[in-house]
Image (cartoon, rainbow, N blue to C red; front, top):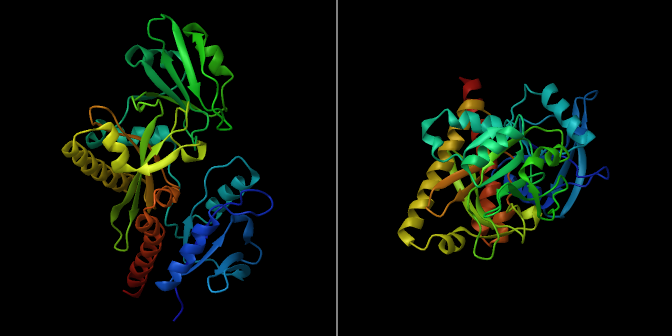
Length: 371
C-alpha cells in the first residue's frame, strides 16, 4: 500500500539554491517516515509544468545525505514560504495561483491590519488588542500620540522587525518626539529627536512603499532597558484540534525596539522572564492560563474565517498590570526558540504535530472518498 505523501514547500535563500531550515526538514522527513508519511522538500522553482513533475529534494537519514528525484505532485502541501523581495517569491505567488486546487495544510494569512480588523469584530478579543489604526496621513499618528505617549509605526506586511519605528513624546520637552527603530535592512537606527511638526517629512523617507499601521506602545522595557515579549506556537494535532505547543520569552538586543531573535534578541524560558516582570506567582499562573486560552481561541477563530491553517505563532505581550495583549499573528513560525531555551520536547513536538495533522487530514479525506 502506498504511503500518503507530504511536500514541504519552501524558498531558496539565494540563487545558489541554498535552503533555509534544512535541518528542520531533515528532522521532519525522519519523523514522517516513522509514522508512515512520505515527506519531501521542494520549491516552486523545482516544478516542471511541462512534465507535471517536481524535482524533489529527498533526505536519507541513514546516509545523512540529500539527493534529488523527479516525483509526482504530493497528496498535501505544507507551505513554509516566507515573504521575500525576489523573483523567487514571484514564482511562489504564481505557484499558489496555478495550483490553488491542491490540498494545502496551511495557506497564507492576510496582512497585519486586516487580521486586527477581523479579530476586532469578536468581543472575546477586543480587550487583548492594542489600540491600532491604519495610517492614511501623519494626522493618524498625531491623534494616537494624544492618547498614548508612545506608538509603533509598522509596515502591514513587515516581518522580522524590519521597518518598525517607535515614536515617543519626550517628557518635559513639549513638541519634541524621539524616534527609535529598525530600518528595512533590520539594522538598529541611531535614536533621534525631532520637532513634532517634522514627523511627516521624516516618515516620507522611511522604509518601503508598503502601507503602515500605528499601534499603541505597551510598556515592556525590563530594568536593563531591553524590551521583551513572548512567542507562542499553536498547532493542530493528530486529531485536528488546536493546541498550544509551547511559549517562550524573547528579550531584545540593546537599543532595539523589538525582541526578534533574527535582530539580535535572545530566547528565555517564559516562566523565568515572567517572574522578573510579575512577582506574584498566582498572578503568573493566571496569565499563563489566560495566554494559552487566548492562543487557542485566536487560532480557532482565524481558521474558521480563512480555513486552511494548521499552525500559527502569536507574539504576546504582558503589561505591568498583567494584561495579556496580542501584538501580532505569524502563519510561518520558526521553531528555533524552543531549541534555544533547551525545551527539546516542545522543539520535537513543533515538527511532529504538522506531520500527525497531515496523516489525520489524509485519513479523513480517504474515509470521505470511500464513503
